[in-house]
Every structure is written in structure tokens, then in C-alpha cells.
Image 1 (cartoon, helix red, strand yellow):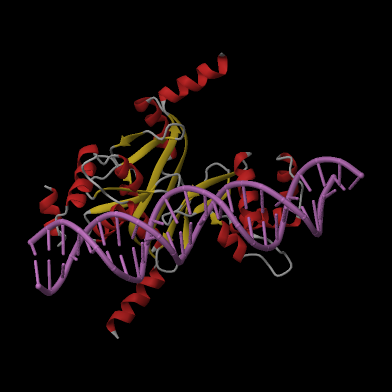
Image 2: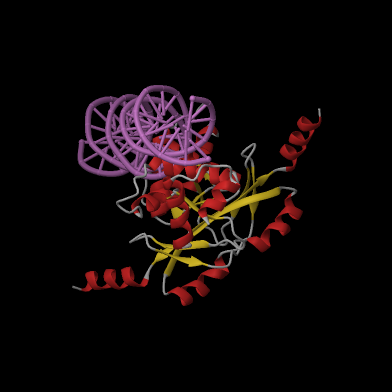
Length: 142
Length: 142
DNA sequence: GTTTTTGCAAACTGTTTGCAGGATG
DNA sequence: CATCCTGCAAACAGTTTGCAAAAAC
């Protein structure tokens, strides 16, 4: 699967690139470069710059899409339709997927109203996850 | 008006702070720190760090809200309800306001589904404005 | 074997912070 | 006049880039 995508993008199928694509495929969530780095097993040596470079070209080629999360960090995911967004916990940095994109339907309406050609969007919702909420509650009362 | 807000936030009404608030009030759009700096008239000396610091405390006090735009830069606006988001041109960096927030209604639904407590969100839509689209078109054909 | 890709270190951008001097109430 | 605020410069995080060594085809 990663081989096909890389061939399609006219890129050589290196171990690092295959790893990056497989993480994105497996986790099936938008990920930051840092998160991809952390996910690397001992037998795959990857440098952060390599991750950024790979994510960059794949985004240019239209294979990935890039969104900016609430901390200003870039997240990448496959350019499948429909794509998704994240609800991210501001305490533990965990996240859950929001499966349907609430913006998509808005776009054609916006194009009509403004004359702009809409090319993309960046959305992340921030909150506190149930676990962290519970822990904070506990800490406060002891 | 800025005096009242600053008093409410228990902050001293300095020239710089009054200027920052007045720009936000006048332009009535989410602005980056850089955009606020550029808007400063010759008679108001403001340093970027002062702008960041002011925007920071006012956000903590709940008077402003902060969103991250598609470039990863922070935008600030008054915490009015309903707040708004931007459709920003990726060529000239101009922007138009999207008046109703398409996320607000989603939040309670998300809280129910995920157990998260939603505390905020970050949204910006990217596109090309009519002027830039026209110019690009012209450049291509000459 | 030629070209592409990687790792490293150094640059870069937006943002934050420590500190001494200056303005505010 | 005590306190809060500012400007400056230096630190910081995330990201990008130049270059020599290494890997892919």
C-alpha cells in the first residue's frame, strides 16, 4: 500500500517513508511530526527533518492533507474523503476523531457569498477528556 | 470603552493597551499580533512583546479569544457571542469574516458522544480571493 | 553508477520570558 | 511612591534548509 502511494508520487520507497505512511494508515488519525517520531520502533531510524520533508512532499502531491491544531502544530492525515478532525485534550494531549467534517458543507455557500475559491481549512476542537477531568476533580478535593 | 474593559480586567490603562483594544474593536476581525503592530500609528510606540503580553492576559481574563490560523499564527478577537472566523486568502493574506460560527452547535453533541468537556476550538478556512484569482489568471495568459 | 534521500547542524519564524528603566494610579 | 507595565535582547518551540554521506533503483 505505501509502495503504491510512493510510486504514484514518484518517490523512492525508503524504509523511513514506508514507516511514516504506515503509521498514518494504522492510527487513522491526524498526527503531528513529533507523534510520528515517537511512534518509530527501535529498528527504524528516522530523523525529524526526514519526517517533515516526507510529510511536506506528500502534502504537495495531494496524498496527505495538513491541518493546524490548537497549539499551532501541524497535523497530517490521508487525503481521503471525507477527512476528519480532532477533539484534543488540552491536559494530556490525547485526542478522539470527529468523523464527519462540519465545514465541508459550508464551503460552496461561502464561495458564493464571498467570491473566494476555497482551497482548504484548519479545524481542531479543544477540551478536557473524561480521565483528566476526573483526575483534576480528585486532586482538588484531596 | 477600552478603559472599562481594562478596569474590568484589573489592568492599568496604558497607551499601548488602549491602542491594541481599539484596533481589535475597530477592525472587528480576528487579528494576529503582527497585524496589530502594523496598524500602529507613528505616535503609538508598541513593541511586539507588549502586544503578545497584552493579548495573553486579556485572553486569560476571558476578554479575548485566541484562534490559530492556517499558517499556525495566533489570531485574537473579542469574546463576543457569537464570535466569528476568517476565510483567508493564501496569496495576499487578506481575509473576510465568516459571521456565524459553524462549530458552536456541534459542541454539545460532541460532549455527549465523547465525554470530553469542550473548552474551545480553532478554525480558519483558506482560499484565494477574487482579486488574486483574477491576477493569477491574467498572469498565466499573457 | 547516477540520482534521490537521509541525518546532522544550523537557520528561521512566531512566541515567550527575565530584567532594568519608565509610566500609572 | 509603590506597583505595574514596557522595551529590549535573549531564549524557546516547531519547522525548514544546506550539505556531505548513504541508500535506492
